[in-house]
Length: 108
Image 1: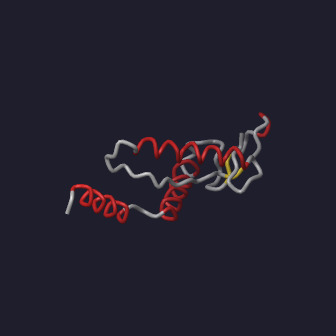
Image 2 (image 1 turned 135 degrees about the vertical axis):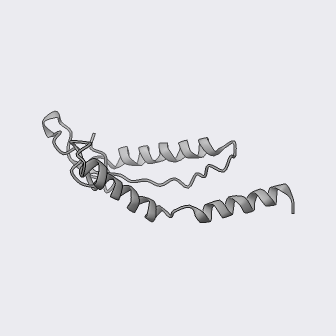
């Protein structure tokens, strides 16, 4: 087995241990509900699905919270950061494109 093949096996094993996108979204929503909403950390987040509440007088409409998942894996490869940043910018583009009324909108 070559070093490359061994490295590929390690990457596959790491990926199999990672939570799925559904698990990640469920856990993130639970955290938003528990911390941001439940503890009142963010006065403009009243639920795990809507943001911008209480900002209408400043021209910011209430909109959906967008949850995004990256397939980038921090496996020590030199391109990991670039893959993650590509996913981040892709999610930002999708969010802005959707606008406040989009399925995965943004409130500002």
